[in-house]
Image (tube, rainbow, N blue to C red; front, side, top):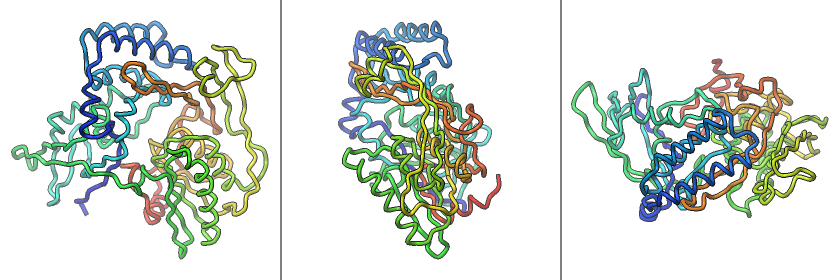
Length: 438
């Protein structure tokens, strides 16, 4: 069937239509923006174990000076964000500048229904409701070429990924430009005049992939289950205890239903607390021998110490190294059947840690796309730029996960392109993925 729509859940930096207009259009003075740039760079140097991953120290300083020289008049917060967030491409994925809390709060409340795009040779096409092939020309009068160029101008240079499509390009453009209103698609069919299609935002439901933390699908007749894990970081403190309890209940259910093939869907899991990842791992690693999980180097700093507590006998600016070991707990209902991990380019941090551990110690089969590299800057703390209130997350450590090639992500055993990581994966789809070779 050629014509179908994909419900797209993605991050849109907003609060509400009225309040976001007030916040993103708030004007910042030149002095305040320069102060935020200086705050960002001085803390990056003090906190990050190695901020000069792409640029040398002199090159980074030149970028800072150039941006301050460029900003010579008052700008809105939206305009300033587009400037200062350009530094994100030079740092690791755990180190980045985001919008303010007010801009971020409405993210989970907006969805759009996009047609499924195909991009060949720079031409973006989709099918309309009459199954006609349409060539997309622009979105809100911004050409597809401009959207593509913007995507590559922001593309991270530290943790590279070649698995992307126009869906990724469009959602990044919309997010970073704080769009939350109706989108106007300009397109042509069969070379005729340009037509316009309006796509209004919808309010996201709570029980959809990307919003919910977990979801379990079970087929008792086939003894198959898909356990969707979208985060290792609960959004609310009260959910921390509920997190481990839910995992325990899932494995109780798998035992009761006699499930012998389990798919772990990590396609939109961006990580979180390693303790929750290890709690899950105890149910999946069947032997109780001591294992190396990762090696970590942490840089001590005043800001890290204030948020995480001191590393004993390590002065600010110095480094502490440790090796993490793991012995699976003797839990009831340990899962001993087949385990498959479905991951995507969006599987990040603790999600890729879990995949690397299962691939190494349980010989689990990985399906999908290559995820985050195994040697990554991690253990971030969160700061706030004083004037714009933009959120600044900065890595404090460097970790090497288990696995042979540290310069690559967890490489799938079965390659499968994940068009939209926020689409739910059914048991039937998971089985189809398992049976496809490359």
